[in-house]
Image 1 (cartoon, helix red, strand yellow):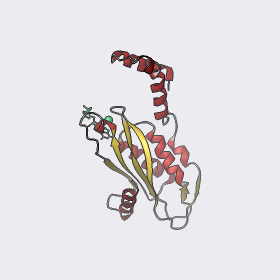
Image 2 (tube, rainbow, N blue to C red):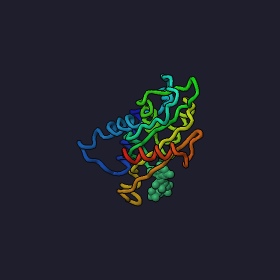
Image 3 (cartoon, protein in one colour):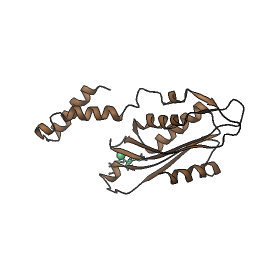
Image 4 (tube, rainbow, N blue to C red):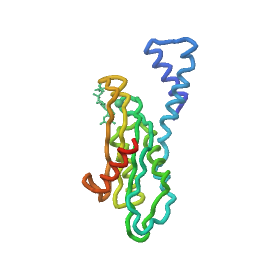
Length: 190
Ligand SMILES: Nc1nc2c(ncn2[C@@H]2O[C@H](COP(=O)(O)OP(=O)(O)OP(=O)(O)O)[C@@H](O)[C@H]2O)c(=O)[nH]1
Ligand SMILES: [Zn+2]
């Protein structure tokens, strides 16, 4: 990211908006550019990198569910914040040679994709697909419940709405008992 160019663009934006708060906004262009650099660290990295270290799965690992992941992302349509809670789950195969990953890595994959301009449905699908592609589990699922600044702060101005999405990959589907368990855990920890 070209932080200097972004700062110049923010200066242009303030000029176009015809706002100038003197000393208070004098360094705002650089601050805003740095804030965007912080929010968009997910570009130029491969989120799958977090799944490189794996461990042997036990013979019947069952469903692994990491719930209560707090996140912040940025809406691709309005550049406003998306804030919420996510659950990432997968079920390693029972076959010899199946692998599991460190639990923190599920949240790290999520954080990388969240640090891009996002659409909630796509964010969940990208995380589930990455786990599916790298670990080849029986199934994976990502549930997200989030508030969108573009819905709460502007436009329709609905401050209390929550959007919940689910992305499911592999042999799991909406009716799978495993996915119901993932929903229960998601609801308990958000
Ligand atoms: N599907 C989906 N839509 C989103 C997400 N984030 C924001 N949106 C919606 O994207 C849509 C963009 O619609 P547009 O009509 O192009 O933009 P707009 O005129 O600002 O729309 P309003 O928000 O209704 O004022 C809005 O309905 C937003 O609520 C998301 O993660 N997923
Ligand atoms: Zn939006």
